[in-house]
Image (tube, rainbow, N blue to C red):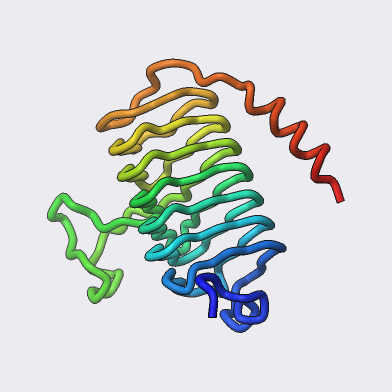
Length: 188
């Protein structure tokens, strides 16, 4: 038995959909797999948790210990993007103000949940230990430094880091030429 599920085993998991060359660790956990879509060439490493409405496009890597809590708000990651180890993305979160009760054992009528879709663009890289909060849109080509907290949307092609994460400079776009070359060489 290998480290990753076979195609036949992926079918049995009941994913909403999945493409070719999907490497899902046997040590990862999926909650509501019927709400999870995985594109082509997706790798999800050990100790990851994916929960709720999640869509990962093509050529996506999720590093070890990544936690994605989407609920019904959803998390979408576009192609050629990657998250390093221990990245946590929340599309749903409890209220921390004290105006409501918290935790998943309490019925929603007693809670003020923060729910908002998280979208991560194409060619995004998110560094280890980063936390992304509900409603954030990380634009195409963004690079987010390690140990950042992303609580506001980030503009395309920026390098950002900090608590909260802020753009510090533009990111180079050379990788777009490499993508074109890669696509030409890998057309089937």
